[in-house]
View 1 (cartoon, rainbow, N blue to C red):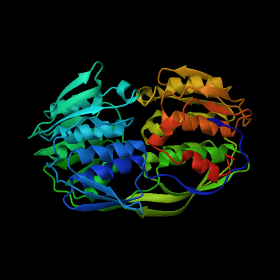
View 2 (cartoon, rainbow, N blue to C red):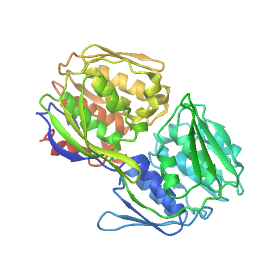
View 3 (tube, rainbow, N blue to C red):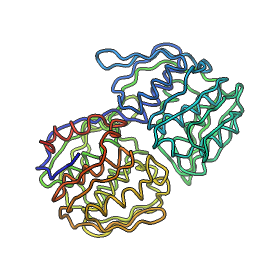
View 4 (spheres, rainbow, N blue to C red):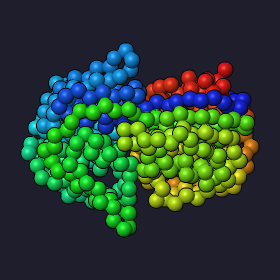
Length: 436
């Protein structure tokens, strides 16, 4: 698909529900006794993989005609043996968090995924979950397909995260739900805290202590009894990133993005774009289901190069690809470091973005842990392609945004992976006037 220069973007849009919250709402509802209701669930392929897996382990999950999801849970400790392999598609979040759930249940589960997911290493999760008593048989390189058997009773874990990873933290906490005793996770660099917020909302005995240096110590009392909840999922800030950057780059644009989750552990891109000179106003700030939410009014702006603190990475790790696109149009040089985590996402996002940016006319230097980008000074990029997206949804959407501010358009080799997180992406661009 080719994305060509767009006229001024305008209008008000809403992005799909937050992917991280959607995954967790299904998992925790499936462990509560009684019926939970979830409104605004992201109905992308990744979240649907989680729903299918929880059904396979005993939960009753239905969607009504109004888009409300009804989940009747099995209770903590009540997961059933799945009769077939759990197909995770492209979803690393589903895989790693569900492994945490299985780790403290006396069942065996096999996880399989698509070509992209099957290349992603799982050792960062299998290593701590092995300590609680789970056993694993993995493919070479600690990759999928993977079969694991949980331990019941499991051993409570006291674990300091060696890398900033909300998925690893969440997997350990989910394992701790059905583990007698206290599970303790020490997080030297804070990551997104949806798991902690939602666990407390469902009634888990969980405490978070923040030390003077910012280190977070999370303790969870095991053998929890979760209570069903009514959940309203806010719009995903990672999805909002794409229309937000598009509105900044396409001259004359002003776009309102409604109902966006503004959790501080996820708001790094907004801060970065404002530092670059982007006009992003938050209006109608409010709290929904324990999560801060607001509407974003984004106006086209001249951007300047930036060198962000690597410590910001966890708060915008999924947004770096589109941040690189913003930097490609800025005045001056941008230097991004401390992004080792991007090497093991759906693709090697540093290498894939560097190659693609060069193909559309950007001067780029790839670093071991980041990238240096020479901005165009606000001028349209030449464009080109087709861009090899490596089955990575965020790469595809990032270069689509670049195409909207290019001279000759940008061609994407495969837009199908976008369905994993943002199935309405092209429809949203049409609403804003970007696609005829």
